[in-house]
Image 1 (cartoon, protein in one colour):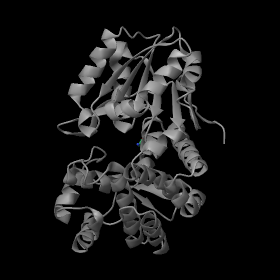
Image 2 (cartoon, protein in one colour; image 1 turned 90 degrees about the vertical axis):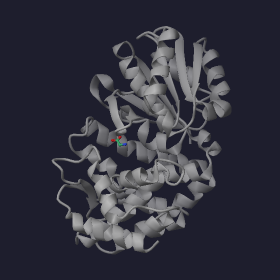
Image 3 (tube, helix red, strand yellow; image 1 turned 180 degrees about the vertical axis):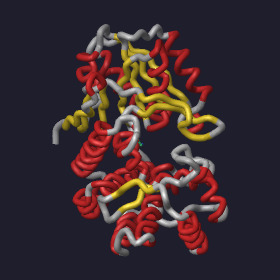
Image 4 (cartoon, helix red, strand yellow; image 1 turned 120 degrees about the vertical axis):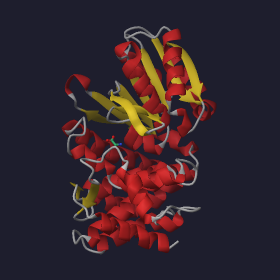
Length: 371
Ligand code: GLY
């Protein structure tokens, strides 16, 4: 299928997302044109380092680029002040300057943390994203949202800092545990649901092959998702309006993630999938769409072997009231009202600020009774 290039047109901050098999081995050639001197610093995590770092370093060194690397512990708990400080200080020790390049090599945690470190280091250095999870390839590596978590909540400290280049190597997805791949698929489905009914049709047909390892299906799904994200980011870089559509399923997801402790019980992408199913159900109850829409969403997620209902989350969950209270702490709350992304049908999402809380509570209570 070769390499596809998806431009993200943001004036002086424009860049390309390149998608294809074998891009890690070509990383030196891809990155060299952006270097003012041949020096780069890679920050990754220990899991990605064990599987892929030697290959990336070899690809950069083959082009004469001098490289140093730092591997952080894997997992969401890395995305906080301690490892952020470690990353920034390490970059300073490596004498990385504004003419050099930082490389974020990993999933969403690494991409967000390293992007933020690059945003503040010497008041901003350039960085390349080489995302190694499906979730990072289709969502977090594109669009310039960077940041870390604090005791007060997720992603509350950060900056918009666009990368200089994104390299999404399809082959790297082959080393993902199936659960992580499917969790990332939750974000892929989200794009079809929020704005492209034909893409959702395509996913219904091709999702199983994608999950089973079909490279062409993976390539197309990443490309279409990135095209959609690029378009939205171009029109609304700093989330004044349309970019909020990317949060389809996320109001429910954030509450469920908080309730389950941001860990193995519920991965982010799994929460997004459950959240999308709930958002469509809510839309139907509000008379916005027909019953067919939530039924199709649920049927597809089921066919993919994904979590669909609150009943699919292991362990105890708090009451519906407590879950709605957790939503109220979400940073996207505007003037104390809950914000939901609802839909008039598959591919027709919009932002709603006036959803009756009783309806949300009722929906969640029913889901909890089904457990
Ligand atoms: N992940 C949501 C966004 O980039 O806006």
